[in-house]
Image (cartoon, rainbow, N blue to C red; front, side, top):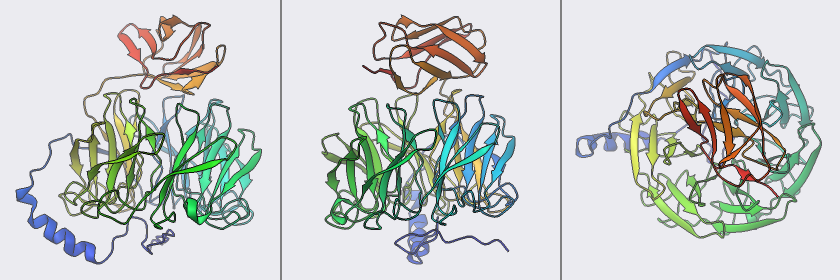
Length: 475
C-alpha cells in the first residue's frame, strides 16, 4: 500500500487534501452546474502517468525547460528509495528518472527546479540532509547530483520553494521554518555552494513562507508568507539582495483581499506583481490579486468553486500576454481542480476542469514550452492515482526564452527555443549580437555594445522568434 506522507500544513490537511465539509459544498456546487455554463477550452493530453517506480505526487514545482530542449521536474515521493525523484521529460513525453533521493542527499523535493546561467539545474528538498530538515542541490542535465547545503534549523528548515537566480548571479530562496524565530528564513547561495542566511522572519513581518522569491525590475526580491503579519493570515514583502526586508501588505480576514498565499509572485509586462491566496475573498475559496511594487493591492478575482478553488500555484504570463494558472480544487467535474487563464485586467476564463482519471489536484503551476505548448502536473489522479504530467495547447506560437533575463554588455546569454539550427540573426532590442548555434534548442549570444532593454529576436528560415519577456541590460 502506498504511503502518502502528510505534508505539514497549519490547517492539518495533507497535500491536495480537503476538509470534510468540502464534499458537501461540492455536491451543492454541482447542483448549480447547469446554471453556470462551462468555459470552452482545449482538453489537456496526459503524457505521463506516475506509478511510484518513476515517482509519484508531483507537488508545488512546475516543470522547467532545459537548454537541451527537454523538460525537468520533481516528484515529492516515489523512486527507488521512496523519498522523491528528479526526472527528465522529452517534448514527446518520454520520461527518464535522473535521480532518486535517499535522505542523505535530501528527501521529498517539493519546489521547482531552476535552470541557472551555467546550464545546471538547482533545487531544494523539504527533508533529508545531515540534519534531516532539507537541502539545496544542483544536478546536471545528464543527472549528476551534488548536495550543496544541508539546513540545520538555525539557518532555515523545510524548504518548499524553488530558487531564483538574481541579477548578481547568486541564487535566492526561502525556508518554511527555522531561523532565529523558527518561522522561516530568506537565504542566498552561490552556484558553487557558498551559503548565506540573510533574514529570519519575525511574526509581525509574516511567517512560514511556502513561496519562493521573484526579482522585479527595480532590483528588489518580492515574496509572500503563508501566515502571521498583523492578522495572522499572511503578508507580501520585498527584500534587498542584502536581506533588508519591508512588509508591503498584510492580508485581512475580511471578504475582500484573501488569506494565506501559497504561491510566488510574478511580475507581468505591465510592471505589476500578480499572485493568489488559497482562501478568503468574496466566497472564501481564494483570490487572484495584483500589487504594485509600492504595496497597493487590488483583488482581481474571487474563486467560487465552479471556476476553481484553493489556488496554490504560481501564475505564468504566457506569450499572448495573459496569465495562466491552476487551482488545486473546484471546477465542474467533481472538485479535482482547474486550469484557467486571466487577462492582466482580471477577466478570468476557466479552460478545463479535471475529473480524476485525467489527473487531480494540479498544485504545481504551468510552464510554457518554447513551441507555445503548456506543460503541467497533477498531484494525484491518473491511472494509478499517483499523479500525471499533461500538456495543453491554446494555439500559441513559438517564441524564444533567454537565460538569464538580464545581463551586462559582454555577458553570455543562453537563448532557448525550437528549430534554431539555421538561425541567421540575433538582436537585442534591434542591436545585432554575435551568436553561436549550440543545438536546435539552444543559441549562445553575447549582449552587444549599445544594446538597450527590450525584446530579443532570432531570425530563422521559418520566421522571426521573439523573446517571451524583455531582456534587461544591466549597468
